[in-house]
Length: 419
Image (cartoon, one colour):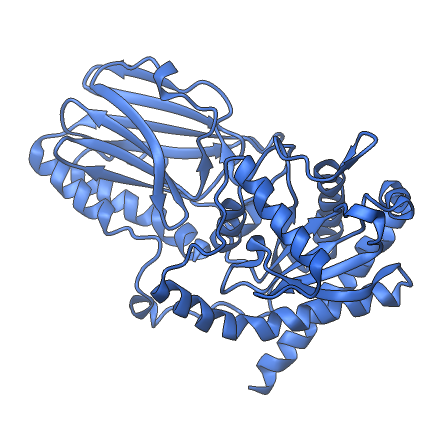
């Protein structure tokens, strides 16, 4: 769906601006990066500026990275709206922004469906004259610039109607004639890597080594290895030491149209009895008490960090729909877990005595994306800690994961060919 956005949003906004009578033919129009460019949820990277000109208003918003976005106009009162997929507004205080001209107020929040929203409340009707998101090729940071111009009521209504028609998630029937996306194996596989914990939630820790830190390192190294193959587009749920809620991690997977979701952890268990790499898949009942304890701690840590615990949050209808979706994704998830276990064992790497287990990890609850959690090792076990610190050992484990993903993609592609 993001690829559809990239192709169509710019054209629709250009038409909308032309209808409004404010399009000058030279301004940039809405762009939406593809999944390969979506590294994690973006954050505000600096102060937002609002400047007033003669019958105009300009806004500048720096972001840590580009994200898909769209523009809207709303009436009663007149508002200019920018939706992002997605921006984390934590730490951004709209009260610190100095307003000017016809900008009366700013608001931020969640728009639903994986979108976050910036609202500019106006004292009179204004429309978009220019809108652009530019990415710095060296740092990867992005900057959204908007230019608004005064409109009469009729022009405002025309542009609002045109922008409302630029739905980035159209009815599937409306795209019946569009080319179907290439199947697995015939295009780069979209992988979302989820380094566990981060920020106020360091995860397990031992003598200065934290789970959040070592898994971010492992995820970055795995990302580089996957991209070097040319067969994978990789998205990370976080690319720095910051907190990301369980709900947001799942949102990243859906926003990226992920083919698979791999959450990375290095936990600790009382008694130091756990050691070796372990694969987990979702189940209501845990394989054993230790698996249940891990799942419970992950969700508790998310709550302490201010996130959303998804356990038991589904109403009856949503639960049925998700069960139907999981009925389709569960076989692929199981094949993914089996392929990873086989590849890790083939490299003669230490695995838990029960290498594939199940538990109710909320981060695995995406109903339509094959999702597994890999405990790369346990910080509560000294040999595991030493291995996790060893760059050469991590490189061997990373190659095993790449081999496992290669095997899974080949198997899924063969299944598609036989249908």
